[in-house]
Length: 447
Ligand code: GLU
Image (cartoon, rainbow, N blue to C red; front, side, top):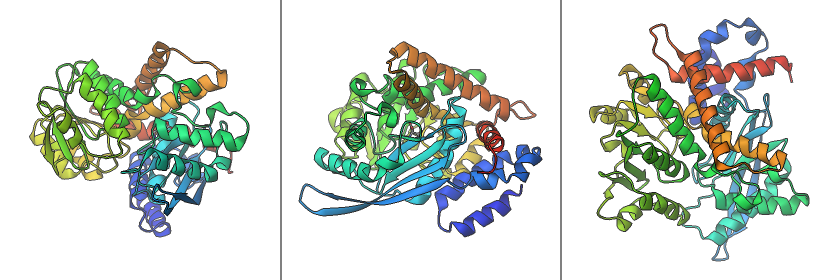
């Protein structure tokens, strides 16, 4: 395989799809050596098949806002790959959503889901609907209009959406309500991230953040380090940041920063339980302002406008917000301030040159598709509970999540250990995910 040739062909076919091309390039670079040892992959053109989604649904979503005005949005579902199980992945509601963004996320999801050890294919969907400033009633009307188009493309053995940026428990509720009404048959497992009284799994809301910290613990352990007493900077204040803040604090670390599009809150003494609880209020308000934390806790949370979480000195950086949120300059600033570990929790949270800079400077780095897989893994556990018509207890879900994160770490070590003994987690995660999906595709023929 010649990565450059495939990339040139792909760029010519999909001009301007920057995030998608970035995600593909990262994976192809990592797997090139392994791929070339498997002529059967080359013969079946596995890579050429794998980089394109199976199909993309695009639809118009019309709804009426509180002022009585008609609003138009676009909705999408990218069904990327179903070689190892039904399509699975979140829905993102954000004003910047484009097909390129959802293709990159669906591509990443395919490898991530393969790493979880559970039988799930990869998908992603969403809309350019902007939840910022919207009322609950507007969110409900939008979700209903969105589901009116989506419902025929999804199902428990077909495609199982969940949350992502801008889509949490409230939105999954509105989406599920409309789905059940349209289907006229109760399919418990058609969405994950559901409420506890209607088929949701305990710990699903916390799972992405908890899983990320379990992974970080394994990574630190392997490097002979401990998380206790370490300063952790977290970007964002949404669901993922919230779960990460809970678990980091529980494990004895000090969360010294959270951030938002408006700036950063520096929390010198470490985040407290009331502050973590307040993150949920901030998310539900749809204001998208982290300054609200320092308005509420002016003594402990010091707000600086226009700055990122990476300006706060820390040991461990956890990007938990959006793709490409951590640039080369941010990486340099982090290192200059003493940071020695970065576990990417957001999908593709670090820009490629930031990752290279971390790696060249001996910073422990692990990619989102390994670190954040606990979220979709627990979605997989929710699907299993739904199929069994059972609810497991928190201990059981947490124990399985632990095992899954440990197994993902092991896969990274197995496929990413370099001749000098250090672990390249980017390579490890990409090769492990790729090998599983490629093998499954090969065994099922050209379809
Ligand atoms: N959106 C999450 C992710 O990026 C979760 C997807 C899911 O639970 O299906 O993995």
